[in-house]
Image 1 (cartoon, rainbow, N blue to C red):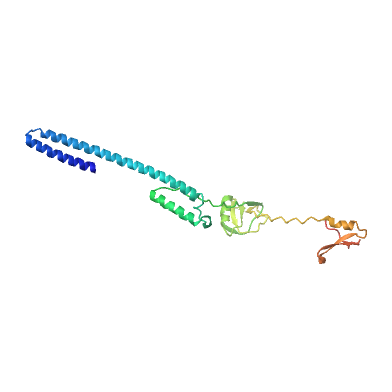
Image 2: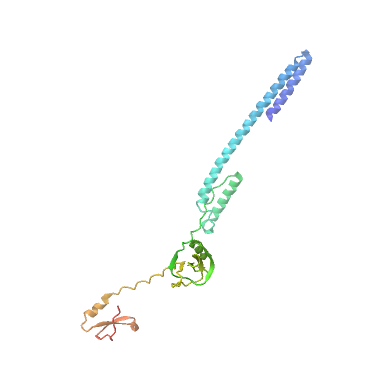
Length: 255
């Protein structure tokens, strides 16, 4: 720009001086002077161009380095203020409005600078509960519920996705094919040696143990010469009463 314009003006001025000198002195050596002058001018242009190119390269390097530092700052800030505070979660109750606004501004800045922010961690779904199958020898379920299979695993997988299927029965008389059955009752008297599988039912909860009997309540009867037994009266708030007896209506005691 400025250097090239200055060189052009300098060249034009020297040309005029050379023309005036040649006309006044009549020396025919002016051609050599013009060749030398042209070479010097071309050389100065090349030097100026190299210098300008060097400046452009330095500016580019500084710009890229500054952008890289800015990107790292954005990434660190987004990770600390957004990712770790569960901004990426889809559940609304886990993120505040201020957090959403701040993180969205960081995302806009990163997009304008061409900076890639750290990806939000993917939340994996909870694993499905494992299905346990119970085997029943010499048994079968009534009625077919769908296709049959060569192996048990495929039959069980199909049965779980089939609303009509409640179990699998293997047929030894049919190349040991595994068939989906409606059931749901499992009959344990297969005349052909069939084998069945069904999803194990959850065990019924054990009944709560009855409260221990407080034997201290009978001590009064043991120390009473007239008392030969205890009778509980359900019609009297289940009170335990001392009785003379001694006959017990000929009933055997409960074990």
